[in-house]
Length: 153
Image (cartoon, rainbow, N blue to C red; front, side, top):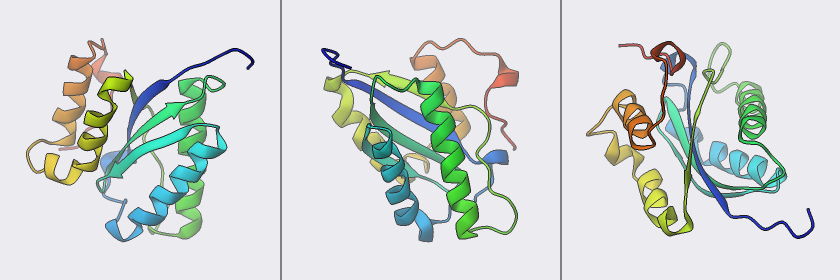
């Protein structure tokens, strides 16, 4: 797009269907490299990525040619096919429907990167369920309980 200049920073949070612990640490580097290549193929920049066994965070500088919903639909679809093709789990891997997408200013990027990098430490203190609800509260997102991630106790 001629004469269009943007810096749109979005933190995406999405989880494995059923919150299953399918994102095994031995596959982390391969998964992150694949996700990076997918983001770059969509003319965007992956700034930070990290995951636990049941969910993933990534900070992306999103190109204006992609809507957030189209970007996430493609990322989740292609990465599911990648994971299934690698046969990292027995059965079918799927991401849960829905996602979180939270925008940041450039001045906040370093803090968000640090937050994403420290997921393992962070989740020793807080559950994903509580973390996600904190994001919704901080960003003043109104939601219906039946439409947020399915949480299994």
